[in-house]
Image (tube, rainbow, N blue to C red; front, side, top):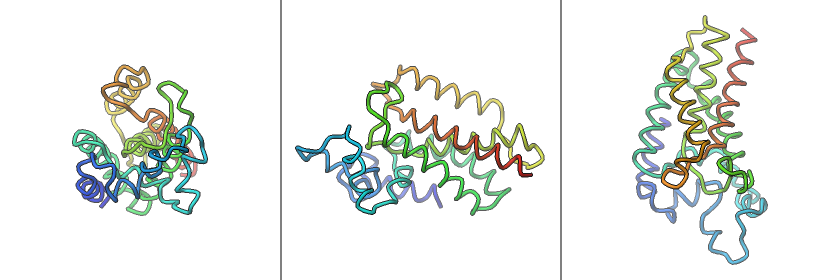
Length: 204
């Protein structure tokens, strides 16, 4: 259902290019149209939170369902399917949904609220994508693999190394011009997932 929702929203957002679409305007951290106002400043937290402060709390989560281009969508959906399928089969849809929520909230909040002066860890309100959650699910499975092998929740060492390597490359900034990344969302999502995986392993 999550993958289908992302695909539908991708089409409704003009394949990620129509930032004036209802999908983009309603689901991003804040409406891009605010940036057209002469007194709006993306570096001021009250301005970044303008829509959330008006009660549109879903914006803390819904940027995960939006993607900027076909490759962005495909990569995130493939990796999401790899991780989410294992969790859903072992723990059920409710646990998967809770994990998505608990990794989306901190990763989106960090990316949306962090200063724009933190280099490759800079934040800003106009980000999108499932990658923070993808890293969160990987972190959860990684901790389960190490600390709770009897759970049946497993991620291969090769997958962990690949995604950590990709995140490290993003943090170096070498792709920043050609392929901007939400590095802070990746980092915080990973840490949130690792925390959830470790804590729940202690309870078993």
